[in-house]
Image (tube, rainbow, N blue to C red; front, side, top):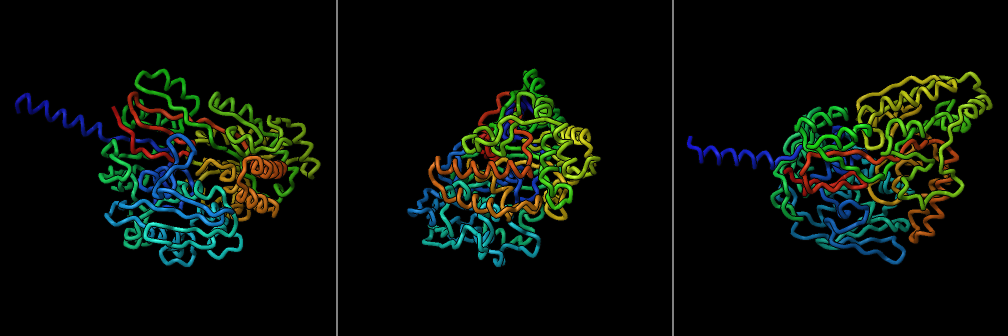
Amino acid sequence: MNKLTLLALLALGSQSLAAQIVYGMGSEPTSLESGNVNDTGSALAQAQIYDTLVGFKDGTTTPQPGLALRWTANSDTTEWTFFLRQNVKFHDGTPFNADAALFNLNRWWDAADPNGYRSAGRDYQSWGRAFNGFKGDAKGTVKNIIKDGPYKIRFVLSKPYADFPQVIGSAFFGMASPTAIKKAGALYGTPQGGAVGTGPFTYQSWTSGDRLILKANPSYWRGPVKSDQLVMRFIKDPSARLNELKAGAIDFTADLNPDSLAAVRADSRLEAVLKPSFNVGFLSLNISNPYLKDVRVRQAIRLALNRKALVDGFWGELGSTDNSFLPPALSWANAKGVPTQTTYDPAAAKKLLADAGYPNGFSLDLWYMPVSRPYFPTPKPIAEAMAADLNNIGIKVSLKTEDWAAYLEHRFKPGFDMYMIGWTPGNGSPLDFYSAYYGADVSKDSNYTPPILDALILQAQATTSRPAQAKVYAQISQVTYDAAVRIPIVHSKPLAAKVKGLSGWVPSPLGTESFAGVLKP
């Protein structure tokens, strides 16, 4: 082999290596079936494969055209018409049009649709949460979905909904190929069935417990994808992800331990990326538990948790704590009667327990997530610290966890006494925080379903002006604070990192950005 040939081969190898990007994920997707997940880890993976009707401008919560070029509403926002983009194809070569959009929408919305495969365990939680149920439900937001032409879809709503475009634009509602779904059947979205969308990357393989491999879509309608291949490796432990980044085994990652910031900044090969703070991590209480049924007990738990010390200790400068379910960016929607500062008062907590009839305390289980999330990057030690605080007032805590998919399922049935969870929204509205965890349709984990909250959430949904919205959200803020069922712990600024020189990564406040523009140096 002569020198010129060797140099050419080396250059080719270098180009091939640079064309692959490797992302370190904190959790494995529970599914790649659009509409059938409710966690941002799965949604992030899906955002590489699918497009939604409405997109969001990079790094913001501002809606922009996606698979719909534009949308219009009638005067009271009870009907929304979406004008779809033409000449877009799914990865399998089949066309995206109104028929394809209607196929996807119907399988999420209509429990009787045979293509929904509900008998195989599909429940489409994300649709039910976003739109107050499904077809035929008395409180359901969507009354009808109509094809008005080959590239036009009209939604007829049962009530006004000013933020409907942002909600339908959530990464949970990516458009999938009807042909691929019919071909894979109930296996669609699994490692065996694959996934087919219109997005920047096409599905290649999914090795459970290891990685998801995606290939650039050569015909992506938005334009060329910068990297030839995207590998999403599943690395639960944030310290392990950082070590892999330092070793060059991955190129970028997120949800690192906040105390790793100094180590990232000290490494000349790495760059820290501080993602926008637009989330909430909280402790959820189940009022079907006989102890937790009493609001005084729930308030005692809130007073017993030294939330400021927790956040200072585990998040440092990358976290804040207050009494709001909403992040600081949405503070305009908080009630003035809810104290901003958290209160730590073990003596008052003990008195509340005694007043409730439990002067000697009792025992409860506290479930912590087995994976790192943007709001809880190190769940186990945080749970241990909370357990210690509760033990100080006589509540003896047993810590428990299980596989992530089972955790998400079992919090509803059979249910947990207390568990750690959080939320990064699918859009920028306060409603997306509240409607994810308050209201009869999404409260099977807490069993807290006062009718007033359903009514207020529907009222917020129909309100258009900011001052009117603020009044409704203030009422929701006060009711939920008084109930002490979901106790806010942290609003984090998730720590991400990348190899120096990696370009084109613009993290979204919503946690589900596309990696189409990411390129390794």
